[in-house]
Length: 233
Ligand code: ATP
Image (cartoon, rainbow, N blue to C red; front, side, top):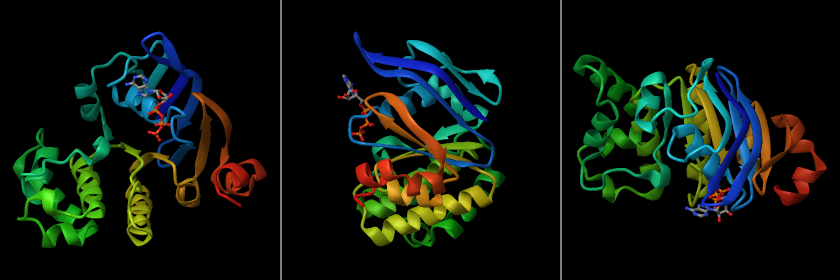
């Protein structure tokens, strides 16, 4: 579904992604783990189209989207849950969800909102309240629910567990697993390597802008290099 080949990206003259190769198959959960500053967010931005690519290609469902404008990607089925949970704090929960569906017709939007509430019951309870009043975990749920309103084939998630209490992290990861069950392909960037690898099919480890280890998630969880560097074992 998503294929990254020889990808390079730079800030000014400083290259921060070096020759990245990575694939995400339809129906998979694939995770990218790595330390702070490794380049994970930069890679996600290359996929969502907000960061220039200086070499290599990004293909989505066989089409080259390397230079495609960011706003055209959700229409193809490639959506990102807003970075930093960029929700509209002064708008209500329901209004935020409707904004995620800006390009669809009303009947479909209503049923999609019902589905989002089924997935995140707390959002239904708070549907008429300003999104700014939600807790961090609830805002993360809203950001994910809003991204799902675009009915993506592939959802890009940037550290959805960041800063959340363990019980909320578990809920978020459970939702990601349920997305897979509904046929949504997920590319999950995480610093929480243990949690991410537990739910993923495959994983990649990024260190200073390079992929250094890749494999089945279960194998990575058992890999001594990963256990020492990322799992604190
Ligand atoms: P984090 O988990 O902190 O988000 P990351 O793995 O996502 O880390 P990136 O944010 O992609 O890493 O950063 C990769 C490298 O690029 C780092 O060395 C960082 O300092 C640098 N960098 C990131 N954003 C910029 C920017 N806007 N201008 C210059 N350098 C940047």
